[in-house]
Length: 186
Image (cartoon, rainbow, N blue to C red; front, side, top):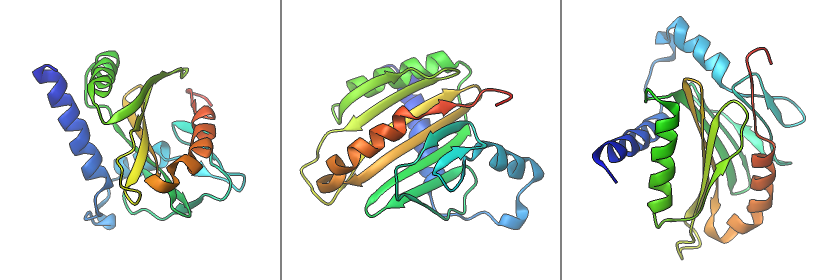
């Protein structure tokens, strides 16, 4: 992998760690712009489990309940030991296509993943990669989906302890099949 590809992967990983880390920002100090971005990038859940109002609509599996999050741009749902987390942020590369190709290439080379696939999404580029089994039944195993849509990047993690992951996989797959990027005016 070239230096630029490695740099992009490192920036993505750092972004994800910072976005998912504990909240330290004072909510009262939020700017009007950050509040508006939070309102327009986070999916909203209705009683049927459909998510709308953000960049991505999808149907949650039965029984998944939203968990409170303090950070803007992060949503999380859980049922038992399975969880779905969505992180929305600004794309950090000038070219959506170049970033996508670098992420795809890096994921395909990473021996940690058992499956890497492009997703057919109208209005954006999607990539899904599922971790191989680690051999530790208590370790969280994830299936990560990265979506590039305009100036935004969405990271969707489907996770469960390794010993339970295969039981959640059909529900995670159904959720992924329901993904629909919202278009302007939707």
